[in-house]
Image: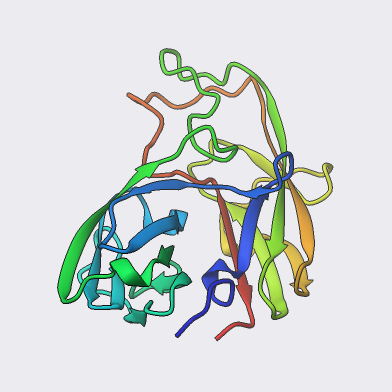
Length: 227
């Protein structure tokens, strides 16, 4: 069983001001005795499913046809549930006394969480599609796992409308593929790395009815070293 902070959730994107993990999706719904406390932005918005056979629970992300590996949550506490794609995970807590006695399924609605520092539309005027204020935000990558993460890299989604990122608040660039990503390097347990994001007020967004709801997080990151 994968423990929290040992898989794709080992690298957190955090808000420096509040020293909290940035939440990309709001989750509503769960099987009895559980609460979804975090859903990775890679799940995307939509309806996922939790399936329980007593205390054994599995996660199916929105749009997926299969559930991920089942996890026994009988001990109570926090658990990591992965979809068939391990990057599409949720964290949940369980209360053993309230877990179902038999089989139970539940729909889990994942909704976009805007105003979270990295969401499309945080500072976009819906009428003119223009960015009406310049923004520069300092975020933080943090290795919350007990293991060293190797070759950490970070880049922007191609739909980031020419936003720019930097590891040093200088020399901003707009890498939109993993091959062109900014290279953070290795991160030991507990290590942090500042990540600066800026968007110019002069930027005009291509015509849209609304900011794209499917591109919730402009920032992508990947690392090596966990199995």
